[in-house]
Amino acid sequence: MHKLLKAFFIIIVCIGLITNCTNKKDPMPEEIVAVKLTEVTHSVIFIPLYIALEMGYFQEQGLQIELETYQGSDTPAEYLLTEETDLLLASPEISIYSLQSSDNPGIISIAQAAQNCGYLLLARETNKPFSWQDLKGKVIIGCYPGEIPEIILEYLLKSNDITPLRSVHIINNLPEETRAGVFESGTGHFIIVPEPLATKLEKSQNAHIATSLSIPTKPICAYTFMVTPTFIENQKDVCYKFIKAFSQGLDWVNNHSPEEIAEKGAAYFPKEEEKTLLRAIGRYKTLNCWPNSPEIDEEAFNNLQTIMLEQKEINAIKECNKIINNSLSSCNNP
Image 1: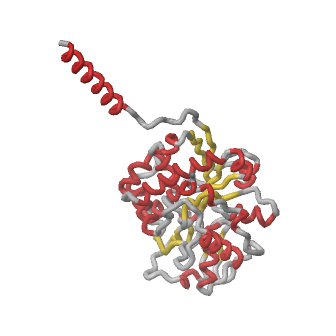
Image 2: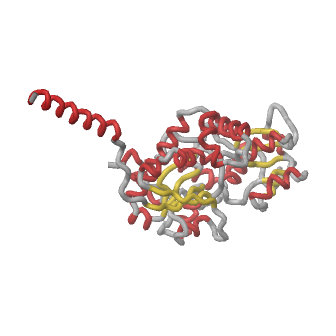
Image 3: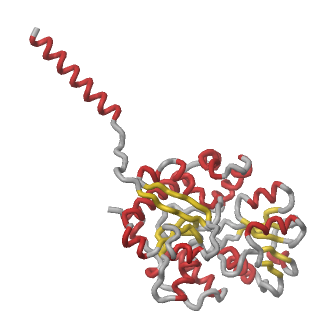
């Protein structure tokens, strides 16, 4: 009887251990840190971020992300520098401009979000095959001077022996939200826009994709996450965790189909039709818009600076170590 009771007790203990192992979950962070992240625009180009949010990768790192789309009256740089936000997702030219105006830069890029600006050149009339010479004597609706898409557009024009504002007229003073409407109303022969707006214009038959604003021979660092040196100093662990979570989103996007990405990211584009979102994601996949790693490629960053220098947007190539911090990438996280 004694042996029977002993055996019964052992069985109960084993069942308890098995139950505990089965129900055990990965420990959640004890403290949740709120982080405000501002994107300069809401675009398919940022879908790795949206996937990371949707999949809960930031929560797993103990971060509660407050995502907002920039609508301030100040410049995005000022918005970051005045601590209106913790992180800024934008084109890194603002950090280059900041360093040019001050020897003590206040904006540091800590991770790369995209390696292509994601803008496409659309034509009102179909010309096949497309030739840059088609733009001579025409009107293009562009972006504001000094912005990456506008800089790349003018660089590509010059590379094809077309002088901006002389051989071709560029309208570059329209607010972003009005450009497509102005084009649809009949102004301009060409327009540069990102996705999903490019696909929507194409579907409405008001425009046709001519080419992308890509430079195959010069990959560029198009969008980065930026913070202030003070934020790095005081919230270094938060930076590590943020980049680690984003890296998971980036990996997920790079290893899944446009259909899977569209399904997971649809909540961030509630007004877009499924086919529009799917086509936009597929096009960005084809253009290789998303890097394999969030670590900033210094060569790609310097390619951007070289283009800006040739366009006379800056007066010299800046030292990367003053405006890039790759030590915070998740692969270097101890």
